[in-house]
Length: 402
Image 1 (cartoon, rainbow, N blue to C red):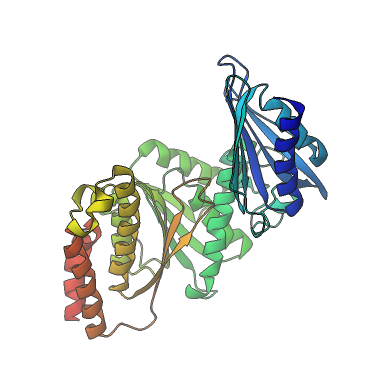
Image 2: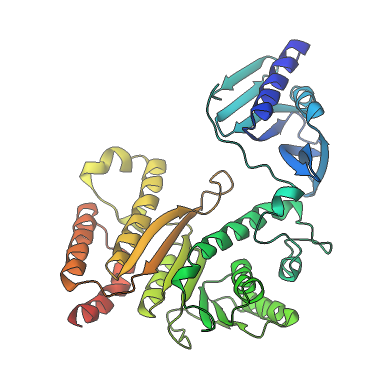
């Protein structure tokens, strides 16, 4: 590219950064298929009070190399590398985005949708901002699980996981007042716990930060995962945390749980975790669904054919319908339910949190019947039979007789 084009690109980045709306800018589509760097991601950070731009280069050997540079240099460096090493630059802000493409002949094409006004202040990363999180990276369990290094510094490629863990704990903090008060012990379950990042984080939050008496169990079907997690808990000396290998439908808890959490249980596994939590009387349920295929395979609604005939849109719509019906079904079981955003959707599409808090007083039978009738009306319109309803129908019949 010529100098004029370099100045145009640098101006977009500098302008967004000066407005405080810059989230990150990414160089991609390398010109050479054999070059060392596949992609470079740059973002504003604050380190020991100094505003810098942090660049992470993702290399072909699988390594991620991170370095910091002055804000004044970053825009020019990106502009020069676009057209040199890379063909594409994406500038992502809170007020829109801008994409710059360089053709094989060196011609620059810019698609700029960054609004000249508006856009909230971007969340700037870095060592200083991480100190505002509930966790700062120095926690022993984060080092043991490979989220941070021996010095307590969050490993670059695990920053997204670190932010996810902290955000989850923020949502846990929001429902503290719905749980039994100290000194009553807490009983917590993580169903379909997987690698158990959240299990360890939630246990640490209540036991180490809040100094509560906690008994927590993670349940999963994978023996190797359970063995690994059990070993980690033992290494940390956490006697109140254990792991069980088995089917959560057959798992028998010690008592009714105060809190049930589940992160990214796939497809109907989320329905199973929700049903288990309801049947066992959980006071609070925090569940983040993962892939959802059940409704996409069932739904037949002529009124929605203009959407369902498009596979991509059908998938996105049924994701939303699935979670909405899950919340509606749990409202029939005396829970106050809402859907929240777990993390930035640009980090992962699996960012919906279902938060359900059981009402302190039983719902009137007439109210419950009316809610369930409306739920069934929607299911019939969509021609779907949600697995969660199958799991809860007998349970609901018993409760309606009470």
